[in-house]
Image 1: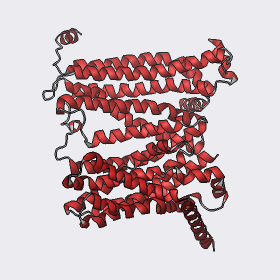
Image 2 (image 1 turned 90 degrees about the horizontal axis):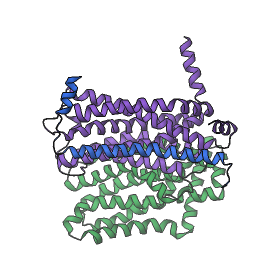
Image 3 (image 1 turned 45 degrees about the vertical axis):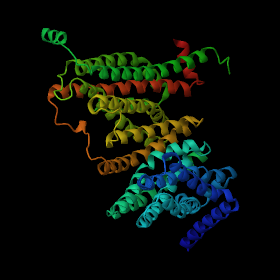
Length: 225
Length: 56
Length: 251
Protein backbone atom coordinates (compact mmCIF):
# COMPACT_ATOMS: atom_id res chain seq x y z
CA UNK A 1 0.00 0.00 0.00
CA UNK A 2 2.70 2.44 1.02
CA UNK A 3 4.84 1.42 -1.92
CA UNK A 4 2.17 2.34 -4.42
CA UNK A 5 1.72 5.81 -2.93
CA UNK A 6 5.47 6.37 -3.12
CA UNK A 7 5.56 5.29 -6.72
CA UNK A 8 2.57 7.42 -7.58
CA UNK A 9 4.14 10.43 -5.86
CA UNK A 10 7.38 10.05 -7.79
CA UNK A 11 5.38 9.68 -10.96
CA UNK A 12 3.41 12.80 -10.10
CA UNK A 13 6.56 14.82 -9.49
CA UNK A 14 8.00 13.58 -12.73
CA UNK A 15 4.88 14.38 -14.69
CA UNK A 16 4.54 17.82 -13.12
CA UNK A 17 8.10 18.77 -13.92
CA UNK A 18 7.83 17.55 -17.48
CA UNK A 19 4.57 19.40 -18.06
CA UNK A 20 6.02 22.59 -16.59
CA UNK A 21 9.15 22.29 -18.67
CA UNK A 22 7.28 21.73 -21.88
CA UNK A 23 5.00 24.64 -21.22
CA UNK A 24 7.81 27.05 -22.00
CA UNK A 25 9.70 26.04 -25.10
CA UNK A 26 12.90 27.70 -23.97
CA UNK A 27 13.34 25.27 -21.08
CA UNK A 28 14.03 22.32 -23.28
CA UNK A 29 15.24 24.12 -26.36
CA UNK A 30 18.02 26.25 -24.84
CA UNK A 31 20.26 23.48 -23.51
CA UNK A 32 19.99 21.73 -26.85
CA UNK A 33 20.72 24.87 -28.82
CA UNK A 34 23.60 25.76 -26.53
CA UNK A 35 25.10 22.32 -27.02
CA UNK A 36 24.98 22.66 -30.80
CA UNK A 37 26.32 26.21 -30.77
CA UNK A 38 29.30 25.33 -28.56
CA UNK A 39 29.93 22.30 -30.72
CA UNK A 40 30.02 24.47 -33.82
CA UNK A 41 32.44 26.96 -32.32
CA UNK A 42 35.26 24.46 -31.91
CA UNK A 43 35.86 23.82 -35.62
CA UNK A 44 35.29 27.52 -36.26
CA UNK A 45 38.00 28.49 -33.81
CA UNK A 46 40.42 25.61 -34.25
CA UNK A 47 40.30 24.80 -37.94
CA UNK A 48 38.50 22.23 -40.02
CA UNK A 49 41.16 19.67 -40.85
CA UNK A 50 39.29 16.38 -40.72
CA UNK A 51 42.05 14.40 -39.03
CA UNK A 52 42.38 17.01 -36.34
CA UNK A 53 38.62 17.20 -35.82
CA UNK A 54 38.43 13.43 -35.55
CA UNK A 55 40.98 13.51 -32.76
CA UNK A 56 39.36 16.26 -30.78
CA UNK A 57 35.79 15.15 -31.54
CA UNK A 58 35.01 13.05 -28.47
CA UNK A 59 36.55 15.60 -26.11
CA UNK A 60 34.66 18.48 -27.70
CA UNK A 61 31.37 16.60 -27.56
CA UNK A 62 31.91 15.89 -23.90
CA UNK A 63 32.86 19.46 -23.05
CA UNK A 64 29.80 20.79 -24.87
CA UNK A 65 27.58 18.32 -22.99
CA UNK A 66 29.19 19.38 -19.72
CA UNK A 67 28.71 23.08 -20.38
CA UNK A 68 25.07 22.66 -21.41
CA UNK A 69 24.28 20.74 -18.22
CA UNK A 70 25.84 23.57 -16.28
CA UNK A 71 23.62 26.05 -18.06
CA UNK A 72 20.56 24.25 -16.83
CA UNK A 73 21.77 24.04 -13.24
CA UNK A 74 19.92 27.06 -12.02
CA UNK A 75 16.58 25.93 -13.28
CA UNK A 76 16.28 22.74 -11.28
CA UNK A 77 15.25 24.10 -7.93
CA UNK A 78 15.04 27.86 -8.29
CA UNK A 79 11.48 28.04 -9.63
CA UNK A 80 10.19 25.66 -7.01
CA UNK A 81 12.01 27.56 -4.30
CA UNK A 82 10.49 30.85 -5.37
CA UNK A 83 6.91 29.72 -5.42
CA UNK A 84 7.05 27.58 -2.31
CA UNK A 85 6.67 24.18 -3.87
CA UNK A 86 9.95 23.17 -2.25
CA UNK A 87 8.47 23.71 1.20
CA UNK A 88 5.54 21.49 0.28
CA UNK A 89 7.91 18.75 -0.78
CA UNK A 90 9.62 18.80 2.59
CA UNK A 91 6.35 18.85 4.46
CA UNK A 92 5.18 15.68 2.78
CA UNK A 93 5.89 12.38 4.45
CA UNK A 94 7.95 11.05 1.61
CA UNK A 95 11.72 10.85 2.00
CA UNK A 96 13.15 13.95 0.39
CA UNK A 97 15.94 12.30 -1.45
CA UNK A 98 13.59 10.11 -3.48
CA UNK A 99 11.71 13.21 -4.57
CA UNK A 100 15.03 14.66 -5.61
CA UNK A 101 15.79 11.62 -7.70
CA UNK A 102 12.49 12.14 -9.48
CA UNK A 103 13.25 15.82 -10.07
CA UNK A 104 16.74 15.11 -11.33
CA UNK A 105 15.50 12.41 -13.66
CA UNK A 106 12.93 14.74 -15.16
CA UNK A 107 15.62 17.39 -15.50
CA UNK A 108 17.77 14.89 -17.32
CA UNK A 109 14.94 14.04 -19.69
CA UNK A 110 14.74 17.69 -20.61
CA UNK A 111 18.41 18.59 -20.81
CA UNK A 112 20.47 15.43 -21.05
CA UNK A 113 18.40 13.26 -23.33
CA UNK A 114 18.20 15.79 -26.20
CA UNK A 115 22.00 16.04 -26.05
CA UNK A 116 22.16 12.34 -26.83
CA UNK A 117 20.22 12.95 -30.01
CA UNK A 118 22.21 16.07 -30.86
CA UNK A 119 25.46 14.19 -30.43
CA UNK A 120 24.65 12.36 -33.66
CA UNK A 121 25.05 15.73 -35.33
CA UNK A 122 28.32 16.01 -33.49
CA UNK A 123 29.44 12.70 -34.96
CA UNK A 124 28.79 14.13 -38.40
CA UNK A 125 30.48 17.47 -37.67
CA UNK A 126 33.65 15.86 -36.41
CA UNK A 127 33.88 13.11 -39.00
CA UNK A 128 33.76 10.38 -36.39
CA UNK A 129 33.44 6.84 -37.73
CA UNK A 130 30.11 5.12 -37.25
CA UNK A 131 31.76 2.54 -34.99
CA UNK A 132 32.17 5.31 -32.43
CA UNK A 133 28.48 6.17 -32.28
CA UNK A 134 27.33 3.39 -29.95
CA UNK A 135 30.04 3.78 -27.28
CA UNK A 136 29.67 7.56 -27.53
CA UNK A 137 25.94 7.36 -26.88
CA UNK A 138 26.36 4.89 -24.04
CA UNK A 139 29.02 6.94 -22.31
CA UNK A 140 27.07 10.16 -22.85
CA UNK A 141 23.94 8.63 -21.37
CA UNK A 142 25.69 7.59 -18.21
CA UNK A 143 27.74 10.76 -18.13
CA UNK A 144 24.84 13.18 -18.53
CA UNK A 145 22.87 11.27 -15.91
CA UNK A 146 25.69 11.61 -13.40
CA UNK A 147 26.15 15.25 -14.40
CA UNK A 148 22.46 15.95 -13.80
CA UNK A 149 22.85 14.71 -10.24
CA UNK A 150 25.91 16.87 -9.65
CA UNK A 151 24.16 19.83 -11.25
CA UNK A 152 21.23 19.31 -8.90
CA UNK A 153 23.61 19.37 -5.96
CA UNK A 154 25.33 22.50 -7.28
CA UNK A 155 22.01 24.23 -7.82
CA UNK A 156 20.71 23.21 -4.40
CA UNK A 157 23.74 24.35 -2.46
CA UNK A 158 23.83 27.73 -4.17
CA UNK A 159 20.09 28.22 -4.28
CA UNK A 160 19.36 31.64 -5.67
CA UNK A 161 22.99 32.67 -5.87
CA UNK A 162 23.57 32.52 -9.57
CA UNK A 163 24.66 30.11 -12.24
CA UNK A 164 28.38 30.84 -12.16
CA UNK A 165 28.77 29.85 -8.51
CA UNK A 166 26.87 26.65 -9.20
CA UNK A 167 29.12 26.01 -12.18
CA UNK A 168 32.28 26.46 -10.08
CA UNK A 169 30.91 23.96 -7.60
CA UNK A 170 29.94 21.36 -10.19
CA UNK A 171 32.96 21.56 -12.48
CA UNK A 172 35.69 20.06 -10.24
CA UNK A 173 33.44 17.12 -9.39
CA UNK A 174 32.64 16.50 -13.03
CA UNK A 175 36.30 15.86 -13.88
CA UNK A 176 36.18 12.07 -13.34
CA UNK A 177 33.09 11.87 -15.56
CA UNK A 178 34.81 13.86 -18.26
CA UNK A 179 37.97 11.77 -18.08
CA UNK A 180 36.14 8.44 -18.07
CA UNK A 181 33.69 9.47 -20.77
CA UNK A 182 36.33 10.67 -23.19
CA UNK A 183 38.40 7.55 -22.46
CA UNK A 184 35.48 5.39 -23.55
CA UNK A 185 35.09 7.14 -26.87
CA UNK A 186 38.81 7.48 -27.53
CA UNK A 187 39.32 3.81 -26.81
CA UNK A 188 36.49 2.98 -29.20
CA UNK A 189 38.10 5.13 -31.88
CA UNK A 190 41.40 3.30 -31.45
CA UNK A 191 39.63 0.00 -31.64
CA UNK A 192 40.51 -0.87 -28.05
CA UNK A 193 38.18 -2.50 -25.61
CA UNK A 194 36.20 0.24 -23.96
CA UNK A 195 33.98 -1.85 -21.71
CA UNK A 196 36.24 -1.40 -18.69
CA UNK A 197 35.75 2.36 -18.76
CA UNK A 198 32.02 1.93 -19.22
CA UNK A 199 31.87 -0.31 -16.16
CA UNK A 200 33.68 2.34 -14.17
CA UNK A 201 31.30 4.98 -15.41
CA UNK A 202 28.40 2.79 -14.42
CA UNK A 203 29.94 2.12 -11.02
CA UNK A 204 30.44 5.85 -10.55
CA UNK A 205 26.79 6.37 -11.33
CA UNK A 206 25.62 3.76 -8.83
CA UNK A 207 27.84 5.19 -6.11
CA UNK A 208 27.11 8.82 -6.83
CA UNK A 209 23.36 8.73 -7.16
CA UNK A 210 22.30 7.96 -3.57
CA UNK A 211 25.11 9.93 -1.98
CA UNK A 212 24.61 13.07 -4.03
CA UNK A 213 20.82 12.87 -3.68
CA UNK A 214 21.21 12.81 0.08
CA UNK A 215 23.65 15.71 -0.09
CA UNK A 216 21.22 17.64 -2.32
CA UNK A 217 18.40 17.04 0.15
CA UNK A 218 20.59 18.33 2.95
CA UNK A 219 21.61 21.37 0.89
CA UNK A 220 17.96 22.18 0.21
CA UNK A 221 17.17 21.77 3.89
CA UNK A 222 19.98 24.16 4.81
CA UNK A 223 18.84 26.77 2.33
CA UNK A 224 15.20 26.42 3.22
CA UNK A 225 15.49 27.05 6.93
CA UNK B 1 79.23 25.27 16.35
CA UNK B 2 82.40 26.36 14.58
CA UNK B 3 81.70 23.53 12.15
CA UNK B 4 78.38 25.16 11.42
CA UNK B 5 79.92 28.59 10.91
CA UNK B 6 82.60 27.26 8.59
CA UNK B 7 79.95 25.34 6.69
CA UNK B 8 77.82 28.46 6.30
CA UNK B 9 80.72 30.52 5.03
CA UNK B 10 81.44 27.86 2.43
CA UNK B 11 77.88 27.84 1.09
CA UNK B 12 77.91 28.45 -2.63
CA UNK B 13 74.70 27.86 -4.50
CA UNK B 14 74.53 27.25 -8.21
CA UNK B 15 72.76 29.51 -10.71
CA UNK B 16 69.36 27.93 -10.46
CA UNK B 17 69.09 28.96 -6.83
CA UNK B 18 67.18 32.06 -7.91
CA UNK B 19 64.20 29.77 -8.50
CA UNK B 20 64.35 28.68 -4.86
CA UNK B 21 64.50 32.31 -3.77
CA UNK B 22 61.45 33.08 -5.94
CA UNK B 23 59.45 30.32 -4.26
CA UNK B 24 60.58 31.52 -0.87
CA UNK B 25 59.44 35.06 -1.65
CA UNK B 26 56.02 33.78 -2.74
CA UNK B 27 55.86 31.77 0.48
CA UNK B 28 56.60 34.83 2.62
CA UNK B 29 54.08 36.82 0.62
CA UNK B 30 51.36 34.24 1.29
CA UNK B 31 52.10 34.20 5.00
CA UNK B 32 52.05 37.99 5.03
CA UNK B 33 48.62 38.09 3.40
CA UNK B 34 47.23 35.47 5.76
CA UNK B 35 48.50 37.42 8.75
CA UNK B 36 47.67 40.95 7.65
CA UNK B 37 44.11 40.46 6.40
CA UNK B 38 42.68 38.99 9.64
CA UNK B 39 44.66 41.48 11.72
CA UNK B 40 43.43 44.50 9.77
CA UNK B 41 39.85 43.21 9.83
CA UNK B 42 40.07 42.78 13.59
CA UNK B 43 41.39 46.30 14.02
CA UNK B 44 38.52 47.63 11.93
CA UNK B 45 35.93 45.76 14.00
CA UNK B 46 37.42 47.00 17.27
CA UNK B 47 37.66 50.55 16.00
CA UNK B 48 34.02 50.50 14.90
CA UNK B 49 33.05 49.03 18.22
CA UNK B 50 34.81 51.74 20.21
CA UNK B 51 33.34 54.51 18.10
CA UNK B 52 29.85 53.21 18.78
CA UNK B 53 29.01 52.45 15.17
CA UNK B 54 28.82 56.05 13.99
CA UNK B 55 28.96 54.92 10.38
CA UNK B 56 25.97 52.55 10.62
CA UNK C 1 43.17 11.11 35.84
CA UNK C 2 42.68 14.69 36.88
CA UNK C 3 44.75 15.92 33.95
CA UNK C 4 42.40 14.08 31.59
CA UNK C 5 39.36 15.79 33.05
CA UNK C 6 41.25 19.08 32.95
CA UNK C 7 41.83 18.59 29.23
CA UNK C 8 38.18 17.75 28.77
CA UNK C 9 37.20 20.86 30.68
CA UNK C 10 39.55 22.95 28.53
CA UNK C 11 38.05 21.50 25.35
CA UNK C 12 34.52 22.23 26.47
CA UNK C 13 35.40 25.79 27.43
CA UNK C 14 36.99 26.18 23.98
CA UNK C 15 33.49 25.85 22.61
CA UNK C 16 32.47 29.15 24.12
CA UNK C 17 33.46 32.09 21.99
CA UNK C 18 34.37 34.56 24.76
CA UNK C 19 36.73 32.07 26.35
CA UNK C 20 38.20 31.21 22.96
CA UNK C 21 38.70 34.84 22.02
CA UNK C 22 40.42 35.68 25.29
CA UNK C 23 42.55 32.53 25.17
CA UNK C 24 43.73 33.30 21.64
CA UNK C 25 44.44 36.95 22.49
CA UNK C 26 46.54 35.81 25.43
CA UNK C 27 48.56 33.04 23.81
CA UNK C 28 48.86 34.19 20.21
CA UNK C 29 51.98 36.38 20.61
CA UNK C 30 54.01 33.60 22.16
CA UNK C 31 52.70 31.00 19.70
CA UNK C 32 53.60 33.26 16.81
CA UNK C 33 57.11 33.74 18.17
CA UNK C 34 57.69 30.02 18.63
CA UNK C 35 56.28 29.38 15.16
CA UNK C 36 58.54 31.99 13.59
CA UNK C 37 61.62 30.52 15.27
CA UNK C 38 60.72 26.94 14.35
CA UNK C 39 59.91 27.88 10.76
CA UNK C 40 63.10 29.88 10.36
CA UNK C 41 65.28 27.08 11.69
CA UNK C 42 63.66 24.43 9.47
CA UNK C 43 63.82 26.54 6.33
CA UNK C 44 67.36 27.69 7.05
CA UNK C 45 68.34 24.07 7.52
CA UNK C 46 66.72 22.95 4.29
CA UNK C 47 67.39 25.89 2.04
CA UNK C 48 70.98 26.49 3.09
CA UNK C 49 72.51 23.72 5.15
CA UNK C 50 71.26 20.51 3.60
CA UNK C 51 73.61 18.87 1.06
CA UNK C 52 73.27 19.60 -2.62
CA UNK C 53 71.55 17.01 -4.76
CA UNK C 54 73.95 15.52 -7.29
CA UNK C 55 71.30 15.27 -10.02
CA UNK C 56 69.32 18.47 -9.68
CA UNK C 57 71.78 20.78 -8.04
CA UNK C 58 70.42 23.30 -5.61
CA UNK C 59 67.02 23.73 -7.25
CA UNK C 60 65.77 20.63 -5.46
CA UNK C 61 65.63 22.76 -2.31
CA UNK C 62 62.21 23.90 -3.47
CA UNK C 63 61.13 20.54 -2.09
CA UNK C 64 61.39 21.95 1.42
CA UNK C 65 58.52 24.25 0.61
CA UNK C 66 56.69 22.24 -2.04
CA UNK C 67 56.20 18.98 -0.16
CA UNK C 68 55.09 20.51 3.16
CA UNK C 69 52.62 22.80 1.42
CA UNK C 70 51.06 19.95 -0.56
CA UNK C 71 50.85 17.76 2.56
CA UNK C 72 49.23 20.66 4.39
CA UNK C 73 46.80 21.38 1.55
CA UNK C 74 45.45 17.84 1.79
CA UNK C 75 45.51 17.65 5.59
CA UNK C 76 43.64 20.92 5.88
CA UNK C 77 41.02 19.64 3.45
CA UNK C 78 40.49 16.55 5.60
CA UNK C 79 40.43 18.71 8.73
CA UNK C 80 37.78 20.88 7.09
CA UNK C 81 35.62 17.87 6.32
CA UNK C 82 35.85 16.56 9.90
CA UNK C 83 35.05 19.94 11.35
CA UNK C 84 32.35 20.37 8.73
CA UNK C 85 30.78 17.08 9.75
CA UNK C 86 30.74 18.25 13.36
CA UNK C 87 29.17 21.52 12.25
CA UNK C 88 26.43 19.77 10.27
CA UNK C 89 25.61 17.01 12.76
CA UNK C 90 25.85 18.86 16.05
CA UNK C 91 25.42 22.41 14.75
CA UNK C 92 28.51 23.44 16.69
CA UNK C 93 29.19 27.11 16.07
CA UNK C 94 32.93 26.93 16.66
CA UNK C 95 33.21 24.01 14.24
CA UNK C 96 31.62 26.15 11.56
CA UNK C 97 34.04 28.97 12.30
CA UNK C 98 37.02 26.61 12.15
CA UNK C 99 35.86 25.46 8.74
CA UNK C 100 35.43 28.99 7.41
CA UNK C 101 38.81 30.10 8.76
CA UNK C 102 40.83 27.16 7.48
CA UNK C 103 39.51 27.36 3.92
CA UNK C 104 41.58 30.38 2.77
CA UNK C 105 44.67 29.02 4.53
CA UNK C 106 44.23 25.67 2.79
CA UNK C 107 43.74 27.44 -0.52
CA UNK C 108 46.96 29.42 0.07
CA UNK C 109 48.94 26.24 0.75
CA UNK C 110 47.47 24.60 -2.34
CA UNK C 111 48.41 27.66 -4.36
CA UNK C 112 51.94 27.50 -3.00
CA UNK C 113 52.15 23.81 -3.86
CA UNK C 114 51.06 24.50 -7.43
CA UNK C 115 53.32 27.50 -7.95
CA UNK C 116 56.34 25.88 -6.32
CA UNK C 117 55.76 22.78 -8.43
CA UNK C 118 55.63 24.89 -11.58
CA UNK C 119 58.73 26.90 -10.67
CA UNK C 120 60.55 23.67 -9.85
CA UNK C 121 59.52 22.29 -13.21
CA UNK C 122 61.08 25.05 -15.28
CA UNK C 123 64.75 24.34 -14.56
CA UNK C 124 64.32 20.59 -14.14
CA UNK C 125 62.01 19.64 -17.02
CA UNK C 126 62.14 22.83 -19.10
CA UNK C 127 58.42 23.64 -18.90
CA UNK C 128 56.35 25.69 -16.49
CA UNK C 129 53.60 23.13 -16.35
CA UNK C 130 53.21 19.42 -16.90
CA UNK C 131 49.88 17.61 -16.87
CA UNK C 132 51.13 15.00 -14.50
CA UNK C 133 48.65 13.30 -12.19
CA UNK C 134 49.81 15.00 -9.00
CA UNK C 135 49.79 18.56 -10.29
CA UNK C 136 46.46 18.09 -12.09
CA UNK C 137 44.68 16.71 -9.03
CA UNK C 138 46.20 19.49 -6.90
CA UNK C 139 44.79 22.00 -9.38
CA UNK C 140 41.33 20.44 -9.04
CA UNK C 141 41.71 20.51 -5.25
CA UNK C 142 42.44 24.22 -5.57
CA UNK C 143 39.23 24.68 -7.55
CA UNK C 144 37.27 22.88 -4.85
CA UNK C 145 38.78 25.18 -2.22
CA UNK C 146 37.69 28.17 -4.31
CA UNK C 147 34.20 26.70 -4.59
CA UNK C 148 33.98 26.33 -0.79
CA UNK C 149 35.20 29.88 -0.23
CA UNK C 150 32.75 31.09 -2.87
CA UNK C 151 29.84 29.34 -1.25
CA UNK C 152 30.23 30.69 2.25
CA UNK C 153 31.10 34.19 1.12
CA UNK C 154 27.95 34.34 -1.00
CA UNK C 155 25.66 33.73 1.98
CA UNK C 156 25.05 36.61 4.34
CA UNK C 157 23.82 34.57 7.26
CA UNK C 158 26.97 33.17 8.84
CA UNK C 159 25.65 29.90 10.23
CA UNK C 160 23.92 29.04 6.98
CA UNK C 161 27.08 29.74 5.04
CA UNK C 162 29.05 27.54 7.43
CA UNK C 163 26.69 24.64 6.92
CA UNK C 164 26.65 24.94 3.14
CA UNK C 165 30.44 25.04 3.12
CA UNK C 166 30.50 22.04 5.47
CA UNK C 167 28.28 20.05 3.13
CA UNK C 168 30.45 20.97 0.17
CA UNK C 169 33.62 19.94 1.99
CA UNK C 170 32.05 16.59 2.90
CA UNK C 171 31.09 15.93 -0.70
CA UNK C 172 34.55 17.10 -1.71
CA UNK C 173 36.36 14.76 0.63
CA UNK C 174 34.42 11.83 -0.83
CA UNK C 175 35.03 12.93 -4.41
CA UNK C 176 38.74 13.69 -4.00
CA UNK C 177 39.89 10.02 -3.99
CA UNK C 178 37.70 9.36 -7.05
CA UNK C 179 39.14 12.40 -8.80
CA UNK C 180 42.69 11.36 -7.94
CA UNK C 181 42.18 7.81 -9.15
CA UNK C 182 40.62 8.93 -12.42
CA UNK C 183 43.35 11.55 -13.06
CA UNK C 184 45.99 8.92 -12.29
CA UNK C 185 44.41 6.54 -14.74
CA UNK C 186 43.97 9.21 -17.40
CA UNK C 187 47.55 10.26 -16.97
CA UNK C 188 48.99 6.80 -17.53
CA UNK C 189 46.97 6.54 -20.73
CA UNK C 190 48.15 9.82 -22.17
CA UNK C 191 51.69 10.48 -21.07
CA UNK C 192 54.31 8.04 -22.27
CA UNK C 193 56.85 9.36 -19.80
CA UNK C 194 55.97 10.16 -16.25
CA UNK C 195 57.89 12.70 -14.31
CA UNK C 196 57.71 11.55 -10.75
CA UNK C 197 60.25 13.56 -8.90
CA UNK C 198 58.46 13.02 -5.66
CA UNK C 199 58.74 9.29 -6.03
CA UNK C 200 62.48 9.63 -6.13
CA UNK C 201 64.69 7.05 -4.41
CA UNK C 202 64.72 7.28 -0.65
CA UNK C 203 66.42 10.38 0.66
CA UNK C 204 69.44 10.32 2.90
CA UNK C 205 68.77 11.53 6.44
CA UNK C 206 70.65 14.72 5.64
CA UNK C 207 67.72 15.59 3.41
CA UNK C 208 64.65 14.02 4.95
CA UNK C 209 65.33 15.37 8.44
CA UNK C 210 65.09 19.02 7.37
CA UNK C 211 62.10 18.02 5.23
CA UNK C 212 60.40 16.54 8.29
CA UNK C 213 61.23 19.67 10.27
CA UNK C 214 59.71 21.82 7.52
CA UNK C 215 56.54 19.72 7.44
CA UNK C 216 56.10 19.98 11.21
CA UNK C 217 56.77 23.70 11.21
CA UNK C 218 54.21 24.16 8.42
CA UNK C 219 51.63 22.36 10.58
CA UNK C 220 52.48 24.75 13.40
CA UNK C 221 52.16 27.65 10.98
CA UNK C 222 48.69 26.45 10.00
CA UNK C 223 47.60 26.38 13.65
CA UNK C 224 48.87 29.91 14.21
CA UNK C 225 47.24 31.27 11.04
CA UNK C 226 44.02 29.48 11.97
CA UNK C 227 43.94 31.01 15.44
CA UNK C 228 44.55 34.45 13.95
CA UNK C 229 41.63 34.10 11.56
CA UNK C 230 39.46 32.51 14.24
CA UNK C 231 39.92 35.49 16.53
CA UNK C 232 38.85 37.87 13.78
CA UNK C 233 35.91 35.64 12.88
CA UNK C 234 34.69 35.63 16.49
CA UNK C 235 35.02 39.40 16.57
CA UNK C 236 33.04 39.74 13.34
CA UNK C 237 30.22 37.59 14.66
CA UNK C 238 30.01 38.67 18.26
CA UNK C 239 30.57 42.33 17.57
CA UNK C 240 27.46 43.53 19.32
CA UNK C 241 27.63 41.28 22.32
CA UNK C 242 28.34 42.69 25.75
CA UNK C 243 31.29 40.48 26.53
CA UNK C 244 33.03 41.72 23.41
CA UNK C 245 32.37 45.36 24.20
CA UNK C 246 33.79 44.87 27.68
CA UNK C 247 36.81 43.11 26.21
CA UNK C 248 37.44 45.92 23.76
CA UNK C 249 37.19 48.63 26.40
CA UNK C 250 39.61 46.77 28.64
CA UNK C 251 42.53 47.38 26.29
